Each structure stands twice: as structure tokens, then as C-alpha cells.
Image 1: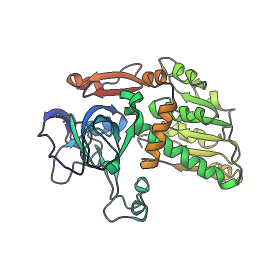
Image 2: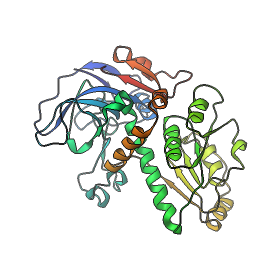
Image 3: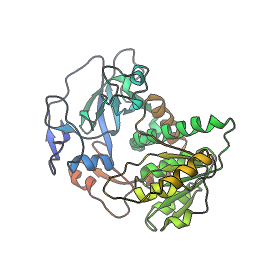
Length: 350
């Protein structure tokens, strides 16, 4: 079989190589990969900035956003040949920590978790994959290759779950307006879920042209571009920050309505210093009962929630979020940054 691999820490080591087919395992799913999504984490691994190979190996199979079709399934499992599935990224640590012990591995406290395609565990970027059924979620056939959005959608499903839990701290939680910063795949999926919750959704992005304004408008949301001043008067009840840009993060922290909630999903590069008036920020957060928190990864219920959100979305809209589909034979093109790109999918099979 063919697999897309990289030597973590080594720039330009990515290659499509031949590997032995996986060994048969009667207790696992045997999957034929249909597509993987390419995201910023994948590009950082390719650039040598991130990633860890499995123990005893020097190369890591890429791919943590996946859609695959079941070839073989264990007897008595919830899956059957022909089913579409998405595989989970994270596996609980072996100790386990208190969170992993109760199935909340996305909240691992000791960092001993592993992640497919990222940390110490091969990913889904191979023509054939073996997967424990406990770490797979079934996808409706109607989604087709659009199911490759399941993993990024699971990140937002978790973020929204936490926002709603936090909101209930005040008893009655009746948010009206949400601001999403960033109109990449994560931001667009955050906006989708905000619209599905009946909220007034505003999306801020630096880009003024291309497909993003139209994608936001098609949701019935409002698009703001250019300088952050364009969102100065919004006072959202909720902010979902999806850029990781330090200047944007700093700007939105002080722009919420009283008792506002800011969820940070983007990861900053750390390459830029910004000045911060800590006293003013402290005063604002304390006196207005504001709350800022970070969210990353997802567990089973978030994947299941993500599938429901994608199934309820307009498939024509989802199809536009996947702005390019690249066949495996032309895999280097999937890692190129092109004008108009939103989400790129690398297709392993039709």
C-alpha cells in the first residue's frame, strides 16, 4: 500500500512511500482511506516544527482528519463492510490520568496521550488503515467525502459544549450574538454551529475577497473584513477565536458584553510580541464577570455531535468549504497554499 510519511523534525522529508499492508486483526476495523484533510498542523509537521514518530520508528504516517470505508469489521461490532467512518485523533494515556480514566482523553492532564498522525502514532494517510472500533464514529452515507470535515467539526462541537456549560454559571444563559474571528475551516464551522443554535453570528477575517465572504453570507451570518475596528461596536456575548493571531486575540478579550465568554481555539506562533495592559484586562474581566478559556481536541461525544451538525448542514455549502480536492498521484499540490483555499482534501480513493 502507499502511505504519506514524514520524518518529524526534518524539513522536506515528506514522501509517498510503499509500505506493507497492515496485518489482519480480527478485533479491529480494516479501512480503505477515501480522503484526509490537510490543515495547519500537517503543514507544521512537514516543515519540521512539530510531530513525533511512533516508538522505534523514524517516520510518521501523516493524516489526522480522515474519512474511510470499512472493508472488514469485527463480529458483533457496530460496523459493517461499506460503512463510512472517521477515526479519532487522540488516544488516552496508559497511566491513566483522572480525565483519561473516565473517557475524557481530550482533557488529558499529564500529556502522555498519543495522537494519530501527530504524536507517536501513525495517522490515516495510507491506503489501508487498521482501527480499533472504539475510536471510530459512523458517518451517514449522504455525507460522502464531506465527512472528512468531521474531525475539525469535532473541535468546534467541544468548544460549543464548553461555552454552553460555562454560560450556565449564571443560571439563565440567553446569548444573542457571537463573534467568530477567522474564516478558515475552523471559523466557518464555528459559525455554522452558531447559526444552528439560532444566534446572530458575525465573522471577522482579514481577507476581503475570495470565497470566504460568500460562505459566511450563505449561512445567514455577517462578514467583517479589514481592521478590527469594524467589529468594535458588536459587544458579542460569545467570541470563538480561531486565528491564534496574537493581535486579534488581544483585541477580542476586551470587546465582549458583560459576562462574556471567549473561547480560544487557535494556537499562536509565539513569533510576535504585543503590548498588553494587564491591569486594564484584569479590571475588565473581573468587573464584568468575563471568562476566557482554551479548547483543543475532542472525544467521542464531540465527534458524534460533529456528525449531527454536518448532517444538518446544507451539503452544497459544505462542498464549498472543501475548496480543493487533490488526487493522491498529485499529493504535493495538497500542501501548496493557493489563493482561494479554504480546506484542501487529499483523495486516496474515489
